[in-house]
Length: 284
Length: 237
Image: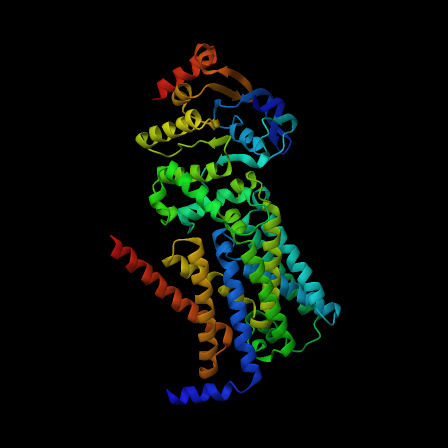
């Protein structure tokens, strides 16, 4: 046990390990806040879909030769998020089908473009890095950490200020609209926030992890808690703890960061499911 | 004293007309039941009254100083709500949103209003319970309490007894009737249940692509269409 702590203490002297922990926790926190509404609105796969869109846009940016691909990636991803979340009940292609279509389409086109016009010698490794974020969380700069911190504060502020409206719109869009709540405006705000979180998170931790960070904590919390507020609080705390634990384990055991966090999330989900089952049993 | 007046209203979607030439008015204190077969445009009419949809042509006028946001709406349940983690209190409070403007949090007066309406609907003891674990009748009472938080004047109810058993259905109708009589709340209700409509409503609007009947309940029972519809119901029963 002592050996493990010594190893951790040694690693924590490196700034890149500190950065990884800070950024991992912030992203886990933000995505768990958004996760509950997304899961309830049947948009669990939107993290996956949008990160594939971001991947497609990145490939195009790389081929075109943009020095800073953010200028292309962010607008394209926001546009897709708005298309998916704001078309709502009017859309001809709905929910899961629309997400699947955009996700698969963007991934395929992105990979195709990379292959056709690639400048790099090692395509599969580039693609793998984008999808799994194997190393990027360990190569963060101070600037990126600050960017992430500012973004997280903004996401939390939006969420707290609009909390009651977000609840009303998620629970019953028609009622909220009939009572004069500007449903489309809140859907738009949510779509933009989600797109921004996903694009930044994807650069840092990879697109596989971002999807897991959005859905697992909320699903776990929903096994046990029964009011909206308690589910949100529980999923935020769970998400932060799982991310921290995952990063620590990956440092000690030398496993990939992203997939270790997801593995911890899965274990916690099973624990919560068991806890929910026991609680229900105890009640009867 | 008219709360809502519709003149030569045509409704539909994607350019397809569902109902046309709708002319009717609802006065303060009325209890209007909208009846008609499936697909006759009842729900479309209700969505138009709520301004969730815009009419193809014609006009809706609101009177009595009634603002669009002061309508209490009881929608049909959605799939999302079946596994939504929300306490009864949270659901009822969300009915107060229209009186808060840009202020982000519930204040004491909103909490008091929610509590009063939960008491009125007899669900106060369930305040901390999970909405999805309640019975169908309890869920409808919770949604009615939420609608009452949003209005003091006009309730729009979309099939409020769908899926409820006979005993709970009767209780629900009594509850709505009391709100209409004692609290002087104008009620507009969509219903399949012609027998109950005739028993409780003061006016009936029967639609099927064109308005087939509009007027006081007593006259509806005498009319050819009312008799035919009632007879068909009895056969079905």
